[in-house]
Image (cartoon, rainbow, N blue to C red; front, side, top):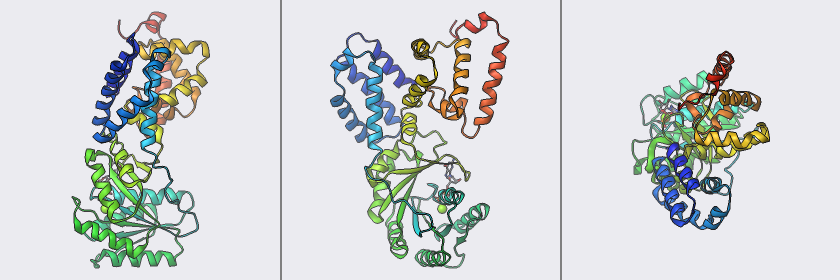
Length: 389
Ligand code: GDP
Ligand code: MG
């Protein structure tokens, strides 16, 4: 995926005459990649049209950095789509906020509720969890288990079958206890069906949430738009959380969810565990979507860290993919200088997740130092030979 985009841009930068045809071919390649990343077909088409309008072939011909111009145009366009123009409701510490979570069964609501509570608790909030899922057997046990582990107060019932009643009671209880973040977990169904949306409407009416968060599994593919829209039509969704970003899905459905709900993505889930939860950051997300590492951030870093006279050579080698051990060694040195190694690695096109699995930054840093030690004992020949030879 990333390879095909890189290849497309490479082809374009190699072409001597940049005309409309070359731009179109490049855009088609990028569009295919975006469709594979689950970006909605219509959005991809609109984006193509926009880019064609924005990018002037004459600029490309005259400019020295065609790849950057195209790349930046696509990048900016995707960032723009992810920005609904207004921030979501932001709860205030010490003031009661009621947050309702909605989404299909299995999307990750219950898990994400706890993560959200835990995230705030660490920052000194007093969160509480209400289990208004009476549909799925075991729902309350699951929430109870999560909440207990995180030492978060919870409310629910094994006997009561009316989710509206439980939701209202739970919210009332925690208001009295002066909790400042009352989180209502709701039920889902396997599919979008009338009964579910009616239930959501009633729970929302009974609890008057300050914010309704739509939880979306990143792997649902092209279904994201309809699903988000269906929830938006029954309750006033004001934010999106995308889960399971640790899997294979690139998360292109998030663009659809933003468009359908006119709400921003606020967090992403990156694993089953409580701490695998990150504030949503648009640039790394878009880089991942394009399968190319955070080029913009990486370039900025390169410019900060690599001595100016070495930059052209490095960029050349990077784009050729012809690293020598010596070059690699220098890069490692630079990376260790750049600070949080995980951050830097996640920016590196092509390197991303394989070398730097999330949560293993320390080990990876140690690994890099080990590589460097190994390289220290290499001969000059070994250091200067490329992988290709
Ligand atoms: P709900 O039905 O919407 O409440 O979904 P659950 O919270 O029960 O989650 C369904 C499954 O997805 C569970 O096995 C969770 O552990 C898993 N899950 C939730 N969020 C994530 C995530 O970010 N990454 C991964 N890998 N699994 C997740
Ligand atoms: Mg659940």
